[in-house]
Image (tube, rainbow, N blue to C red; front, side, top):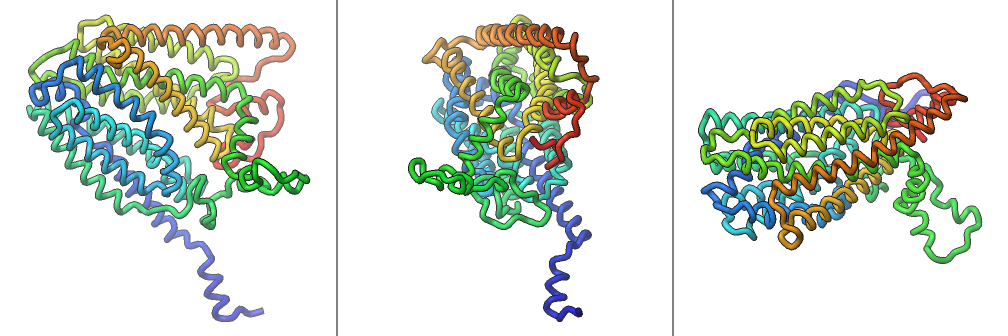
Length: 497
């Protein structure tokens, strides 16, 4: 039967147009990656601590260590959950604009603030920019189909790392070779950040987000949510009696997510890498926050051209990118060796922290930090995959959000006890000795767990041989390999549970 004119037009409009779609996708990718690159162009960031301690601001080391820097941990804990919820509720773009405005506020306060209170507000706005990073990392997944998730994630991550590296190198070159003062460097950073804020105005705002904005129709090519496929009326269909909690609350997305989370949290690998994420991330960021103060103590020079903080940040970023890339090619039986690998890397981190505490050579201190950051970044993609591969998209966001929040709580508690003037108020050298003991205790716990798992597997191997070494795979894949059963059908590029 022949189609009428309107029907032909309707069918033609519904048919995909590969050329136009491909061109639109590449434009979106290019603009987003360019924005991610420009948002990292802050050449003055590596030199904030010597700028505060120098003649421009003339703060004391005690003020910076025990009054100004601790505010970053407290405010980050306060804004993390609200910004995470607003990111989804407002569909990403408004939070990216908030991040840009906060960056501009940080550098305005750095340039024109003169009191400790001004610098504490600067740390508060900087905590907002840190919490808003989730908006950029998850923004693109609401715009592109699942088949492009992996490539888009790699592009956006590469643009961010390239921006950090370029910014650090540019700052170091301007300071060392151009003899640019720190105040001028901050004006340059403010110009870059203002430009990135203007770029954020032209970002496309999605119509659909992960949790709150689910009523909008799903784009062509976007996979339906796994939680959407659950029957919201299942409890009522089974004859559940009305009462408390109300049916609308029982069947809400958040409650169903919590039920699913309670089921999947029983996976040993998920628990292991979540524990690593919480405890090691807390220690890692404490080192990152205070290492610039330590560098100023080790090398208290008044010659700004001999401050190489930007070079150390650039080298650590480059090594972190290389170790992250290398981690994807490691072949190992993660169910058996994961705890031992974590223990070895944690012992390495403890040794590097002790070297930073003990040495009086600024170059050894720089090298120890570069290796410390690279060792942490080596385990990040492994932990990310081991956690994410067993979960649906919604549960991934929830688990990563919970892990980040718990790590922030732990980091804040340690800051309050060790760094804050209302606690022990330790000088920076004593703090690094405390962090060395912290990583040493983590190593002991991981090593004991590795020994126990090794003994249990050794007993089981007498009756059942271990599977061959594998590349970076999820716990579901390892179990399927051991049982010689076919893997479940992949969804979003990872096996479904």
